[in-house]
Amino acid sequence: MIAGRKPLGKEVMRVSVQIRPGESFESLLKRFRKEVAKARILSTYRRKRWFTPPSEERRLSKKKAERRARRRRLRLTRRTR
Image 1: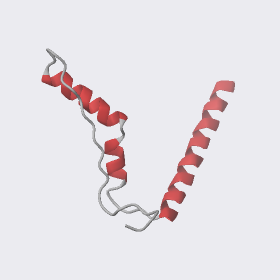
Image 2 (image 1 turned 180 degrees about the horizontal axis):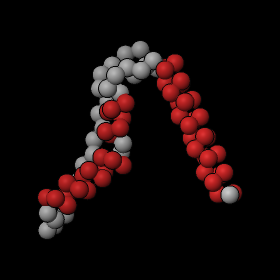
Image 3 (image 1 turned 45 degrees about the horizontal axis):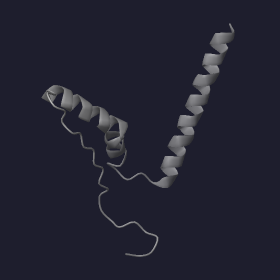
C-alpha cells in the first residue's frame, strides 16, 4: 500500500442491534432499519453505485446550493407578505 492512499476495495459499514428480552422480531427489525437510516448506509450505497467525476460532483453541489437559496428566498418573501 502506498502511503497516504486508501486500499482499493469496498468500505465496510456495520450496524448491529442487540435483541432485548421479550422483543418481537418486528420491533427488532424496525430498530435495525432506524439504525441503518441514521448511519446513512443506503444513501451512501446509492450515491457510490456509479463513479461520479469530481467536476460533476462540484457541479451538482453548486446546483443544489442554488436551489436551496432560491427556496429560502421564496419562503422569506412569503413570510413578509
